[in-house]
Image 1 (cartoon, rainbow, N blue to C red):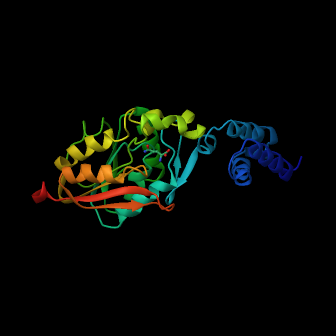
Image 2: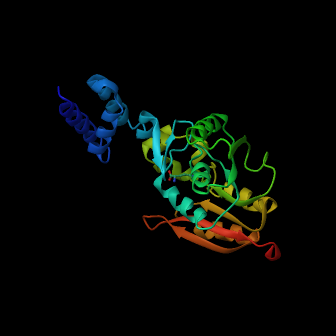
Image 3: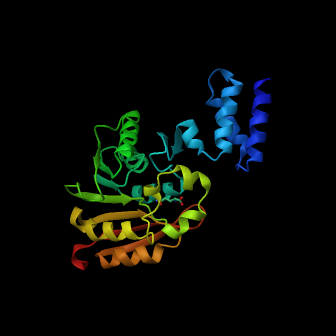
Length: 264
Ligand code: GLN
């Protein structure tokens, strides 16, 4: 069989398994197959047809301006999250904290874009931190990025002018409706709080003022229905100028605000 034959066969198998964009995915899997080895390619196609995330088979995901190593130990970086990156980069910052950093894609994208800044990424999962450190090394950001195992703020010290987080925000009751790629292959602790989806926002908004100077910013990724609830939590914690920002699909995706000491 020629490469084109293998590609056609792969795309047909992906299409039969209802994978969206089967041609594109077949192409990416072919490109990731050494020596144009047809059977190896087909093995990858079969994994994908079984709903293993494309990023887990390829070993990477492109996010914002870089390629990130991705495994089943971290949340797969999503294009939606670029909305948070853009909101954060709308103003300069010197020291950033990323709570629940996973692959490190948020912290590392921000540090790369803001050349003088330094930052800390936390995660409760040592396996996730291992991936984040690999990504930091690959992007040559080790001098400016520290990674700390921590349950939210537990092990965090020092002051920041920007705190960002894409926490687990899916309610326990919504987990069963997720795509199989997400439900069965992504780390459950990165997705859900096993409660109403708002637990992390409650914890983080309460403690964030202790780590932010006046005028410091807090920026969250949220699920599309959580804008009002997260805005209220931020208001109660002393944040001002709170904005809800939609993603490219027009769904609410980010909440951002400033900490104003006098308003607390
Ligand atoms: N956006 C992800 C999803 O809908 C959820 C990520 C998260 O909980 N932080 O699958």
